[in-house]
Amino acid sequence: MTIHGSLFQDFREKESQDPFSLQNKKLLRIDMRYGAVQAKTGSMVAYQGDVRFQNRGSGGMGKFLKAAVTGEGVRMMECSGSGELFVADEAAEVQVMYLENDMISVNGQNVLAFSSSIQWDIHRIQARGAAMTGGLYNVSLRGTGYVAVTTKGDPVALDVASSPTFADAQAVVLWTSGVTMDVRVDTGGFGSMLRGGTGELLQMAFGGQGYVLVQPSENVVNGGHQSGGQQKGGMLGDLLGG
Image 1 (cartoon, helix red, strand yellow):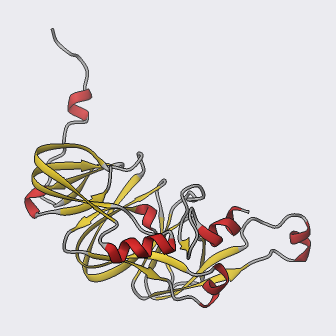
Image 2 (cartoon, helix red, strand yellow):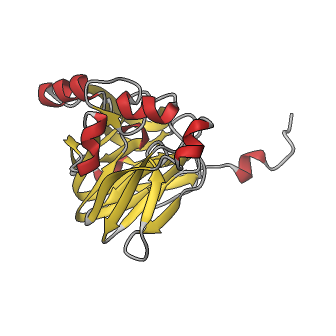
Image 3 (tube, one colour):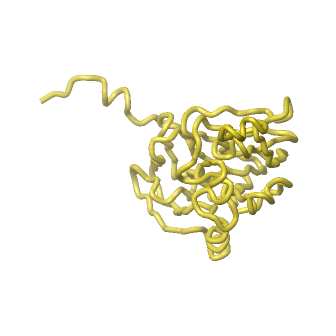
């Protein structure tokens, strides 16, 4: 019997010499010849060859305690071996970048995979206005290597040096080194408050030099940039969620 149609031609594996490459907008292909990688636990959808997986949990006792206290973090698994590994996260779009002795601050919900040469940790965001939320925390990725993050839809990369930049905390995916962040309270005025408010009370205000990546969706259910001692978005998420 013969199968007719272009299915197996249109969607066959794309060959690439890059360690991290996009099979399509929602599927990341990792070439294991370049060494072990860290990937979000449960993100493997397929592999060819001999790939092994080891659960690294929250990345050690120190990160485990930080995750427990802050509500932020990401569970990672170490992937090693040979062949090709395909990872995804609930059909979200995948964005790939290469850090060269640099650092980004990422919402833990959006971390998908990164080279083992990249160091990661949970860090407190230094922002004057963050005190009113009980503290904001993010995941820092630092060093040299590949990083893949997910976004709900195609994101926009805003140059914060070109103009004052503000974003909903639940929509912010990451920002680059050199970017400063503060929390802004926007009540919409007394009359707006009497009518129930705008739903945009707390915003992230960005400055400095670099980019902030914003997705066209809000991580309201799963929580975004977490607040200390709170789960599923913490105090900031509760206030934003209304």
